[in-house]
Image 1: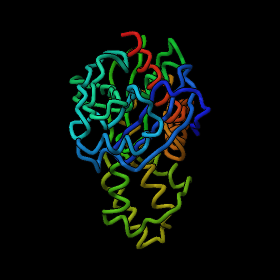
Image 2: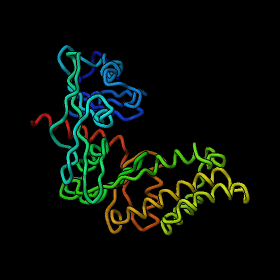
Image 3: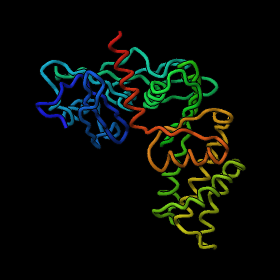
Length: 304
C-alpha cells in the first residue's frame, strides 16, 4: 500500500476490460508499489465516465504534475473511452503510436495501447491480448512459438522474430456461458466440474468437431434418461467446446511450442487438453503477462 513514506509513483499501469479495471502504481525502477481493482469495466461506462472511474481508484496516487497512465484492453474499443486504432499484423505485439485519452484533470496523462488486426487468412481483431503477448516475449527474448490466450474469446497467436504473424479467435468461452446459463442445457447444469467428463468431451470434440451441435443436445437427453450428473454435464460441455476449438486450431499448436496465458481452472484445462495431444504447454499467469507487457509499452513511450 502506498503511504507518504513510499517511493514516488512514476507511472500507473491499467488493464481495463469489459467487466473490470485493474491498476498498478509503478516505481521508476519497475517495482509495483500498490495495486487496486474495480468493477467499473468498459461495459458499464459512457466515454464521459471513464475519467471519473479512474480517478476514484487512483486519485490519491496522483501528484501535482501529470502522472502517465498506460492502459490496455477494451478501454480502447469503439465503445470505450476513445478508440485506439488497430495495428495490422505482422508486427510487434505492442508498438506506437498509443492513443491519448481526453482528460480534464491536469494530474493525468493517459495513453491507450492499440490492438491488433488482420484481414487474411481471416478477418480478426484482438484488444488487450496483444499486451499479454508482449509480456510473454519480454520474459523470453527470441522465443518463437504460439501463444494461447483462453477467455471469453480465446486467441491463438503465432509469434516469430518478435512479431505476431497471424492469429485466430474462438468464441468458446462465450458459448460455454450462453449454453450453460441460457440454453435448454441449463436445466442439467450446476456448480462443480467433473474432470473425467471433461476428458471424455474433449476427445469427442477433437475427433468429431462436425458433430458438435448434435453432441451438445445429448447432454440434455442423458440428464433426462441416464442420470448424467450436473457436474459431469458441465465438464463434458467444456470438453466438447474446447475440443472443437483445438480441432480448428490444430495448425497453430501441432508440433509447436505453446505458452498458455491465463488464470485458474480455464488455462489449466487448455494445458490439460494440449498435454493429451502430446503438447506440453507452458503456463504464464495473465497478470504477470499483462504487467510485463505494460512495462514494455511504457519503455516504448520513454524512447519516443
